[in-house]
Image (cartoon, rainbow, N blue to C red; front, top):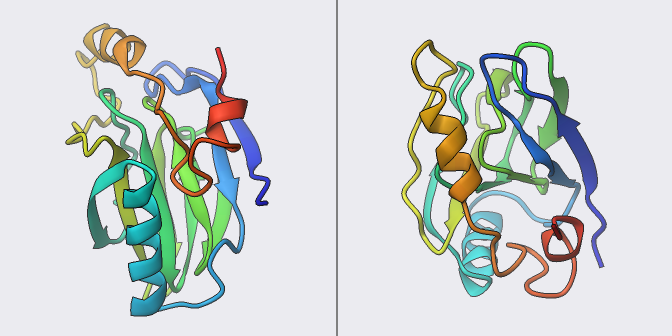
Amino acid sequence: MYLPKTLFFQDDGQIPNSSLPLLYYQQVVDSNGDKAARWLENTFAANGWTNSWRWGVYDFHHYHSNTHEVLGVFQGSALILLGGEKGEKVKVKAGDVIIIPAGVGHKCLSHSPNFTVVGAYPEGKSPDLLKGQAGERPQADQNIAKVPMPASDPILGNKGGLVEIWKK
């Protein structure tokens, strides 16, 4: 069973972040490229995380106020800044998965030429895109407070991971 690292981020005034920890699974997939992407898509979908896409991570601070997000790296590597400007830099590589609670900022600082992720959302929610700009809050805070707890972890299903760690 995979045990994720937990990373906590405080509200920094622009990025609300969350009382829920970001979960960082390392080396969940032992392959890369299209085979790993398909495995991630299928595993996420089997656990109720759908509306998937393949791409990179924006190079500006952003967060989603209406849904949690999972990112599975299937190719390359990147340095991601999590939690806003005063957050934590994390090096991710093919095989890693991060589960980002609603409100937690993320930004790609640098990446290999082939860096690509599969992203998905609980119950296929369509995410909004907020950048920590003036006027976003308090509506963003109200949205975040209404985001339901996912029924399952995108990797471990209903036994383990966020199901246990994110208990309120």
